[in-house]
Length: 114
Image 1 (tube, rainbow, N blue to C red):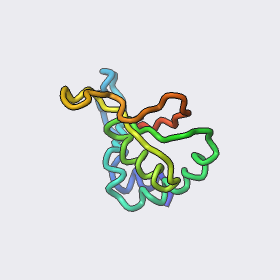
Image 2 (image 1 turned 60 degrees about the vertical axis):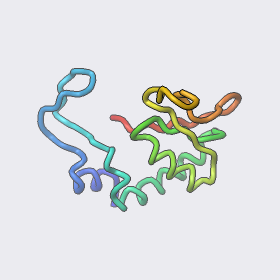
Image 3 (image 1 turned 180 degrees about the vertical axis):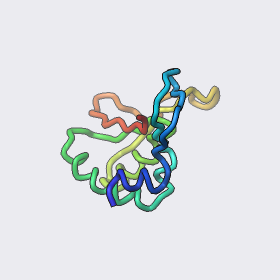
């Protein structure tokens, strides 16, 4: 099953009038947040892994919230270090936005946006 089939079958690609975060109106809405909850997701991402392997990087970093499950899946399959970027600081603990040390590293950023 290809990616487009998964999107249509699972109703993640919607057609209508949608107000986007930017305030613009779009005839399409692509909601990929539920993608990891479908087993077909893993087959689609496994194909992408072959391309990711070819990109020069030292670690995978997911951008919260949508990019974290995908980054985790990729990092686990490639057996590579992984971290994530928070949407905002927690206000307690270490109070960090970036939950990994990236100094001197080539980072492959993963975000689930359209």
